[in-house]
Image 1: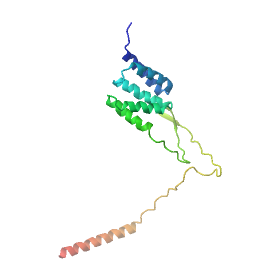
Image 2 (image 1 turned 30 degrees about the vertical axis):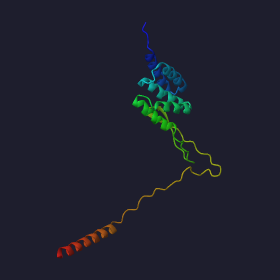
Image 3 (image 1 turned 90 degrees about the vertical axis):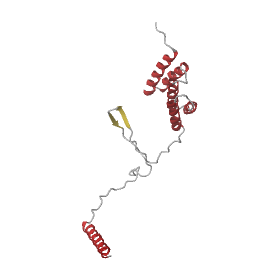
Image 4 (image 1 turned 135 degrees about the vertical axis):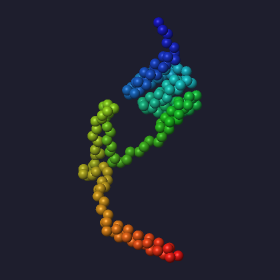
Amino acid sequence: MEEVSAEQLASQLYQQGIADFERGNYQQAIALLERARALAILETDLGGDILVWLANAYDAVGKTEEAIALCRSLKKHPTNTVRKSARYMLGIFTAPPLKKLEGVVSEVPILESPDRYQSKPAARPKSSNNSNQKPFREVPLEKPSPIDSRSTNNFLLLAIAVFLLLLAIWAKQ
C-alpha cells in the first residue's frame, strides 16, 4: 500500500476544489480548499494557489470580507504570481459597485456549450404611465447627402488658379 504525503493530498484536494468551483459548487470547493490549506505548506507555490482559489470561492458565496483579508495576507507571499493574483483580486473585490442605468436593458446569453448559445429574451421594464415609451432614446439614422460635385470642381479650379498665379509672381522675381 502506497502512502500519500500531506503535500500530495493537498494537491489532490486543491484540484478537486478547482473542479467544484468551476462547476459552481462553491461551498464544496471551500470545504476542499480549506482541507488542502490545512495540509499544504502555505509559503510554496501550491500553498499560495490554494489560498488564491479559496479567496475566489469565498467571494463567490458572498464572504467578500474574508476574501479581501485573505488577499491582503497574500500580498507578501514569496511567490510572485501569487502576489500578483492577490493584488489583482483585491482590486476587484474592493472596487466600488457600478450603478445600474435607469431604463437600460441588455440581453444576457444562456450558454449551453462553448460553440453556441441561446439568446434569452430581455426583460421589459414596467411602465406605469405610457406603455409605448421606449427604454432608450431612438436616434434616426439618415443617409448623408451626396457631395455636390460641381462645388468641389469649382473649388479645385479656384485652388489651381491661385497656385498658378502665385507661381507666376514668384517666377518674375
